[in-house]
Image (cartoon, rainbow, N blue to C red; front, side, top):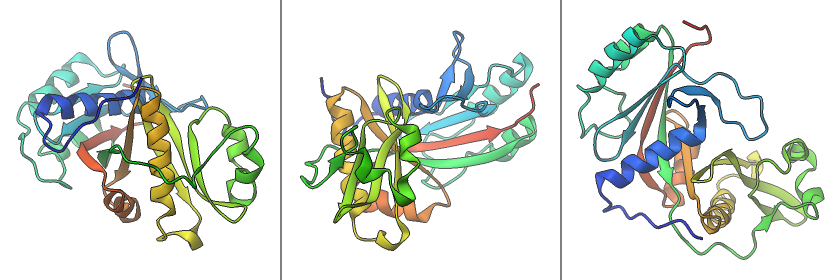
Length: 246
């Protein structure tokens, strides 16, 4: 089963659904749809943010709350969410960003979120398996041994016999995977990250899930990768992080 294709002309419901899948991939939730922990495939995820606002490219914002948020704070935040515009420009914080930070007494984090479109991956990409693990897990990528096989699929690009760029699933649900890309410093800017990303996305789609990618507002390098790879921006995320419980 292959995940369906979304075009830039898709309606608001499609973008809202993808942003919801993005949040569900990032965090685990309890039976009441409240955020619990960071959804790390290798286990041991830290506590989820106290508040998360998914802003689809089209349509209204989608708020999520951690499982310890008091009902009164939740109601105050929802009132602010109802004032958020539906046509906010890219790379802008929510209208109520300062109010959310004050309300939850936490630190903000903003991200751009993308869908990796369908494309024909380069035949030179190599996938991480038990047989190919020695090619990947050496030198700078030795940490892949500790993650294997929890972050599959993992696609890589080799320079000779040396892995120089890898793209793996760092957040996983049956409906969506989030990409994590690592490229050796001296090999950046050569298109290797885009090749690894395309191969990874093709494998994720064939599993029936959506291949998603996100990066912080200030991460220009990752945004350049998204631009060169022709990723479709589906929206933006805004989270408030607070370590202490209410």
